[in-house]
Image (tube, rainbow, N blue to C red):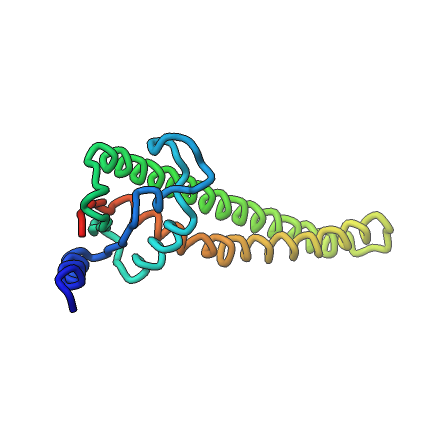
Length: 183
């Protein structure tokens, strides 16, 4: 192992998560020409950060960016840190709202399903006659009740859980301490 490899290995061992960058541009999308303070983050960067932080427990941790010493610019790093914090906070809040909306919609579906099932049972129990209108009501209420009931459960149990990994990632990243260092 040469001196550069040893130093790089030593730096990576100090931080909980370390990512090597060839330039600051690797953090941002190649297709976004705006300044760094507004630029979209790269999907590749986000995927790599998600993969690298998968084993990290929620709470404060250090995400260290290793960049060649000749390319380091403290002013640019301050802008990037702020951009990262803003991005992760914004997306965490968006995902929280989405998840809450899914749970709310699922709960509403559950209530509607329950009401339709009760109405169907009421029509059957109270009007056990041969009226065509009453039969149509039962035919409509019972399947609607079951549909809304099971669809509501699906939204609450499964659809809200689909966002859990993304939500956990953004929750972690909102508490991350971003550190730039050179190698």
